Image (tube, rainbow, N blue to C red):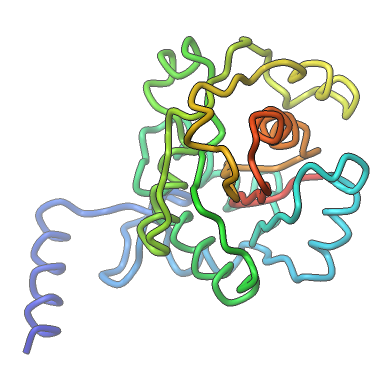
Length: 232
């Protein structure tokens, strides 16, 4: 009976306030969340062998990040890029929560040895967060916390250096750009803790590595990283 009522209410709400796909902008079906099933099935998933290759490329030298996980591959002008763009620039907070839930469910199945004590979203600089109005990584982390019950701490680290966009920078330029960009603001919260850092997209790994570095220096025990996608 409750399933029938739920279906009725979803249908009623959709008729009054229709929801649209964060990628293709078509009307969502009753059972869809944030992204339509057609767009979701076109997004390329990443298997564990590819993730190991990417770990070695992005984190193998410094080894600040103990392990990382991204379920999807970021492709330009494709469904996932459109979805992430809507999350970052169109106030589609639920898209972040949805993908955070997806990441959590996949990590539970594929990384059962991960036992982080807390979740920290990669922070934006105060000026950039003011410009945008929010930090998209916070909503991804919120979705992850919702599924796992792991404590989300937003204010343990701040971005103390305003950096230019990393998008067009080389690997070396990204490392130089992000160097010294983070500062731990609550050492007690991170001391002796296993921490999961969450970002929207991991490209070279420079950002999460630098954030992880200051957390380790502040006494963090272990650093994991997760994102919606990886990019080359």
